[in-house]
Structures are given as C-alpha cells and as structure tokens.
Length: 390
Image 1 (cartoon, rainbow, N blue to C red):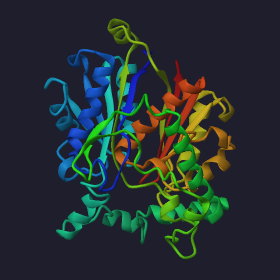
Image 2 (cartoon, rainbow, N blue to C red):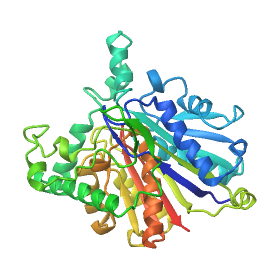
Image 3 (cartoon, one colour):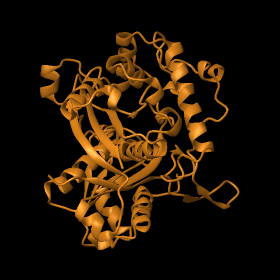
C-alpha cells in the first residue's frame, strides 16, 4: 500500500477569546495557514486534490462548508474541492486520517488536512443554543431519551468522573496545569515553536499592526499559588478554569503527500503516518475514550507504550492526560513536552492538526522516532494517530 507522508505542518499561535485574533474572519485565518503550506513547499497549488478541514461550531462565519470558503480565500485555484469534518475536538485529527487514507488508497497524491475554530466569533455550543432559542429543538432525540433517560452531553461532569475513577486530587490537577504552562514557557523561550507557527498580523490597542506569533494563553507568571486560588467549577470537585483547556481562536494545516508526489516536487518528508484509528466509548464519562483507543492502537500497530518517544494527549482537562498516564502506564516525561491546551489553548476544530504539527516537530527536534497523538471527543470518542519522524 502507498505510504502517506507529512510534508508540512503549521499553525497559528493560539489567540485568547476576544484577543489578538478576534479581528480575523475564521475563513481568512485558515486560508492564511493554507497559503503558508503552499509557500513553504513551493508546490503548484493546482496539485492539491482536496482540502479536508475540521471545524466543530459550523454556524455563522464557519457555516456553509468552511473548507470550501477557505479555498476561495486562499491561493488555491477554484478546481480544488473541500469538505468539512466534525469529529468534535478531534475534527482536524480526523481530517488528517481522511487525507492519509486518500493517499494510501491511491485515490489522491496531494491533500491538505486543516482545521479552524474562532471561539470568539462562533462561540462554543452556539449551533445548538441558538437553534434552541429559535425553537428548533435539541440534538438529544426522543430515541436517545428512550434508551438513555436523562442523558446529557456534559464534559465538565465527565472530567470530574475521571478524577473520581482514577483517584485524582485538586493538588494533582493544579500541579499538572502548572506543568503545562512551564513546558509551554520553556518551548517558547527556546524557539521550539518557530517552525510550526505562522505569524498573523493584528492591530493592538494603540492601533499598531504587529505579528501574533506567541501563544496568547501562556501565563508566564503562573505559580502553584495562583493556580490554586482559582475557584472550583463544582464545590465537591477538583477542576477549575485553570486546570481546563483555554477557549481559543486558531487554525492549522498539514500537507499529506504520496512518495511519488514528493519526489516529483523535490520535497523531503517530516514524518510518515504509521497508524490511524478511532474508537467510541462511554458517552457519559465521555473523556475516557483515549485510554482504550490508545491500548487498541498500540496493539494494532504492534508497538508498546515504551516504543513511543513522545505523546500528545489533549489537555481538555488535567484529569484526561493524568488518567491516561495511569491507565496506559506511560512515562510522564514524554507527555506534552511543549505544554498543552491548558496553556496553549484548544481551538476545537483546529486542535487535531495543531497537535500533530507540534508532535512531529518535537520528535524531529529531540531525535525521537515514534509519536502518538490522541484527543478526547464529545460523545465519548477518541482518535489515535502514530507518526514516525523521518
């Protein structure tokens, strides 16, 4: 079977809600990272055979197949098609899977997998809440209610259920949150993100145009005391806003190519897609699915957790990677080595491809071979991707 190679992987620096990226229409934001992929590789834009794009809140500025709108705003010609994917927080990780599957099957040689989410301009859950306000109903159907009385999609409850199940305390979650910021601070100061971040112009409060190229959510002054002072989201729980992922604006893009297309373009790969899978789990605890998904992925790939040099486990809440570490008996020193969503933000539809780029660049910087990425997803889902750095 044809192999799928990652040739470029880029992202915007994360923007806080109402922050530096608030003036960017999400279509133009993701078009900017697509354009950067084309610029970096110098390929003919007409060679791109499809754009697969993750986006969760497909409403307003992110509606009407945002992938196609992004193509129309980019350097890509009108002949390039696009499709938008919603696998919740793993949407652009799934976009990479679809792109790689197209290349591996031989149906395409050059595909861009991308993701976008402006959580400032298309607020989280607004697709459901605005519809409910207009009387258009709920995603929870009578059939679901019949089979699962009282069922609700509640990630905060899931995060607390994870804490209870895996014996995690407030001290554990706070310490992990601080670690996320510390790792992100170190990566930023050491220039670890330089290869993956696309500088985006913005106008500051004084009216001066500057470049946004440092993740806006990093709290450089964070201490265990400041994190510990944040109010609990639930009185009897362990999670606070400080130990949860940050609402974020951002975009990401990954160029997936076949070996033949790479050679014809004179390009070298960053990594090879070694394994892809997705698994469903309990929709109530919801956030636990990365654990069985990782265990199954390793078995299918013929690898053990000790064979994996680095892991990216999305920090939806501190409890998710902490529980994952315990359950799969993984090495904490290999986890989210450049920080995660607690510090860097979680632009939902863009997070999958964002994490892929961070993981691949970190592998190459450290001399590692295999990297594993997994994301917990609404409804109790999880994608797992294993990359081999080249």
